[in-house]
Length: 201
Length: 129
Image (cartoon, rainbow over all chains, first blue to last red):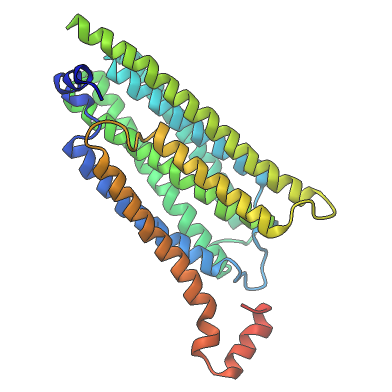
């Protein structure tokens, strides 16, 4: 890190990636990670207990989940691009990329909801077995986070539109982006442990 | 001020490249893991042995975790990020303890804690823990 770059960082405090608020938010994300760890542990322990019902290999649709994963991954990328635009002070681009992220995030949530509806309709709801209870809790908690993220993104979009890219708004946006990237990070493991390993067994 | 915007633009194109690299690597890693599982379930005879397949897709997932941490979450980048990285590493250790510890304890529970008859019952019910 050379001196000129440090100087520009100080001149634009809203771009500070390691500031106190971001650090505090980072700690929150880490506690959230601990909660997800507990849910992953529960799933890992219970995934064999299908109570005579269908297991992961009969229930999950590999192609659908791959598509879902790529949608969320792309939304994480467009969220990064939105932050870059915000950093350059380009309001329209920031809004454009955040709208793209919002649409992709909504698409992801819709795909997940469709999967839940399909499972429940076929009699494999959360009450059917310990495996399904653990599955719905883990994936549902992630989906709930996505929902909160989308709400947050919607509010932020209104704020960008009304207030512009003020340091206050920018600071909020960088926390939102961190939250969104974090959710994609958790999904990698849901994709791998729940879906891929479930189908491979 | 002009100097600042120029710097921001230069910084921007570098950061843009970072996001693009992270995205492309993540897509490749995701599709690779998917393809491995697809090959495994679609072939009649076992082309990839089961433990090798599980180890491979877990390795791909951890690689993608590192890729996204570096390229999307900027862990380890910039001044004062040492704490962020340190806290992440310690949290990751907790996560491993919780997950692996739970699996280990629960998988040995029947053998360690229950009378022989109960463990025998559980084994015949579940096909063995």
